[in-house]
Image (cartoon, rainbow, N blue to C red; front, side, top):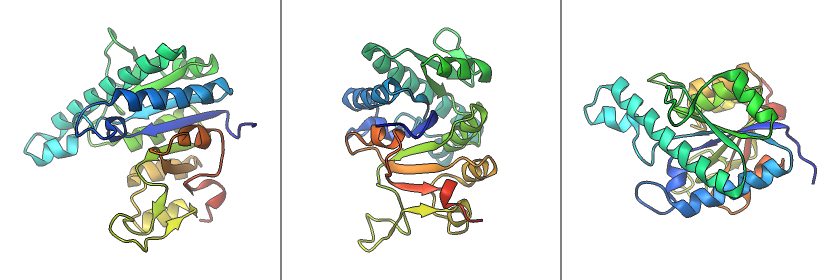
Length: 242
């Protein structure tokens, strides 16, 4: 099957790495993700990944518990590096060359984020995992995904979630919730559909980068999505009418 994309960015939440655990990292889940990403890379697609840290520490929750918000966010950024290194290990054990680049310098364990170096790694067939968010507090890893996608000229952002797309209400609470096949950026913002935070949506809109939201829990979905199969909900791109 021919691929639709040459270069993509995959956004993984930290919670996705937990599997059915209540905390931390499920090695089987990480291995499964690595295997699917490997299949995509072997088909010639350049893959960059942004991973969250909510399975270890979430800055917003830390701030809600009384921590200084900036401090809590920095701790959350460090948590994302732990996840990035774990995913790197799984990919490299399969034989896929991988680089972790961090927005906060940690030269003993990862490269500092350098845009041109990241692009060169991708051109050489390496997977690049961006850790430590954007390096700034008060910004989410969704915003980081949109920012890095724009910087590396990715054609699309794939957001892997626990549901099979975007709904008009919570499908777990409303059995009549309707799933959208496509949405414009404007519809997401005006209807507050919480696909990604508003800053991330605006960045993707301003740089004409479509977002595909799909269910990570279905085996094979990462491969299907990144290989261009119609899956989940697409925001922007050909669906954009504004």
